[in-house]
Image (cartoon, helix red, strand yellow):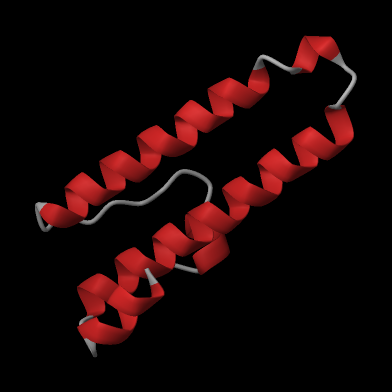
Length: 84
């Protein structure tokens, strides 16, 4: 993703999508890490982990498809993080 951001140059479209995707992946990774670290041993919370993995994969695929089609896509919970 960083290579694409670098190679795209001053393209605001690619820059916006890359910033959104990177923010989503960082937030998503922090959420999964905190769940794995804090909730290990609580069996009732284990079904959340596969659901969050599917959510992250689904959002990434939708974002990639929208970017491919030239549309703007805002990932869930990241517009406040990026400041858009």
